[in-house]
Image (cartoon, rainbow, N blue to C red; front, side, top):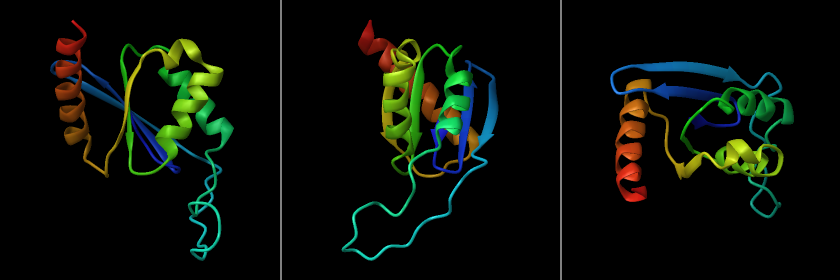
Length: 121
């Protein structure tokens, strides 16, 4: 799953097929520009309703890889840990990743899960 503060792109990745679902954050606040001497990263925290919509979609996922360019993936991981521990246990990794095409993300996920499966036994 690729995530930023504006949208989540969920991929059900099979050996030959990939299905994508996009969840838009309806309450997105555009980037807040701050001077360097202010606390914060210049973005608002993820909206709880947005995180709950994602959590609901992830509830049926097997193994989960959370990727994205900013802090949203870490915020979602913490949300899952505190409010949806059964889903959180299926998160295999949280990794930084820039914007990729759907095909690139699916290929990255397949490669990651093949390698992780071998390491996990």
